[in-house]
Amino acid sequence: MKKVTAYKCDFCKPDAPRLFLSHSGAKKHENRCWLNPARKSCATCMNVAPLSDISVGWKCLENIYTPFKKKVEGCSHYKPSGTIFDNETN
Image: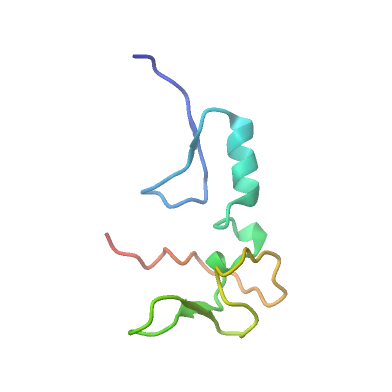
């Protein structure tokens, strides 16, 4: 067995981080990671909320997009928040 050095994404969930063998691979991932607030994606926007208690899914409070139906980044209605995973309990 050999010890290896790995790099992890600073934005992915702490309990399920993406690991990379190269610094450049990790950097490429971080630039396109949907949990990177710089991308202004639905996953880090204050306008995203669960549909309801009986439905599974997400809604955009600005009614601009259906979150996660397509990759949205750079939304003009983006309001920074944490991530959609911040309120998860283990």
